[in-house]
Every structure is written in structure tokens, then in C-alpha cells.
Image 1 (cartoon, rainbow, N blue to C red):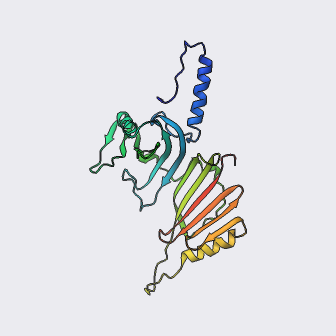
Image 2 (tube, rainbow, N blue to C red):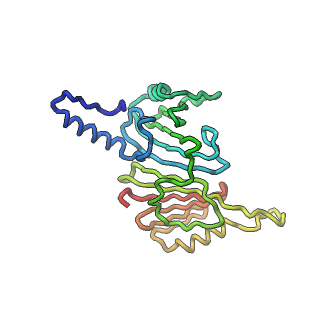
Image 3 (cartoon, rainbow, N blue to C red):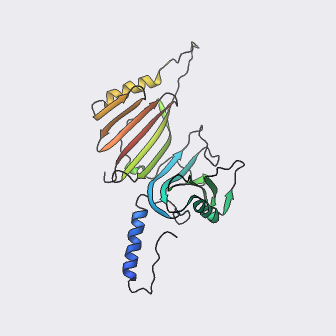
Length: 258
């Protein structure tokens, strides 16, 4: 990659140079997921990764930026030494094919690199850059490869269905892992046509989870926001009951050492 120092085999200090390059790589890519295709889609002039996440989404109400209904993708936020124009021009230069929209976004470019569909954005307000790498459609999966370590700290219910999950590494608080899911609550509807839902699914679920988790460490529930949170096994667990969206959002964060 262009942002890493190269070894010079003729340098009498080549062993030291190699060590420095390795240290730089570890530092700059410390929070990058191990299956991110960095050789295919480099992080241009990266100085530090802020977060790296792998998402799977199969909610039929969501359409990806490439018009997919079911999609899996990497989302990386990082700091770059490149200016906005240099950054966007770089990704245009490595696209096998640039995708130009009818109404393009001036801060973002889209294109194809090998089997991947890619967006790269730099909003020029600071040094933060964003790259999303979408898997081919035949590689979409609902199973997150990182969920073999998923902490089972939230009991799921038949009144809702999972429609998105993600795993991420976060460069904060000494390094954190993050697991997320969101669920769509199944609406029983208004069978008697009186204008009122026959069952208050959210009310039932909230009372259920209060009973399950209210004795956990640092338990809190905000009835206005619908946010329930607690600490368990070293993880911060947050379950947001969003009536407006018809969803429950689950977020579990813990230190990388967990």
C-alpha cells in the first residue's frame, strides 16, 4: 500500500526498517477486521482506523446504495492524510469501472473493484474518510462470521424477527468489540377494526424484559426513549424499543480483552 514504508534491501539497517514498517502496519490497521479485503480495496493514506464493521441486512424495507434488498458489506471509518480531492481521485483511479449517478454526491465516489462494489467518501470537514465494500450478491449471508463469540445476554422472542446484524472493532476506550442486531416486531394488527391494535406488542415485550433484566448491574430504563440498558459479564447491553420504527435495536459492547 502506498501509505506504508517500503523495505530497502540494500540498506544496512534493513532489519530495523522492516521492524518499523511492521509496527506502523499494526498501529494503523489495529482495528481493521481480518477479512476486510485490504489488498483489493486499500485505505488510502490511512493514519488510523476509527471503526471497522461487517453488516448483513435482509430487511425488505431497506435498499442498499447499489439497489440490493439483501446485502452484506464492510464499513470502515478511518483517518487519512489525503485531502478530499486527492482521496476521491485515488479511488476513481483504482476503480475497474466508476459508477456515475444521475445526481452524483460531490463528497462520494462509487465503482467496481474486482468482485466488489465500493463507495468512498470524504466530507472535507476533517480528516475522516469512509469506505464501504459490498460483497457480490451470491456471497450475501445472514450468518455473521464473527458471531461465534456473540455474548448471549439478550433473550430473543417469537414476537419479533431479526433483520440485520453487525460485528465491529471500535478504536475507543482502549479498544472495544461491538455486536448489534435489530429486530422487527411482528404486528398482530387490528382484526376487530376498532382503530386500535388488538395487542400492544411493545408494551408486552418491555414488561417482559424489565422482569428479566431489572436486577442486573446498572440497569436503567427510559420510558420516553424506550432505551433499556444494563451491564453483564463485562459488557454494556442496550436494547432500544422503538415504536416509531417498529423495531428493537440491540447493541452489546465490551473490551477487546473480554
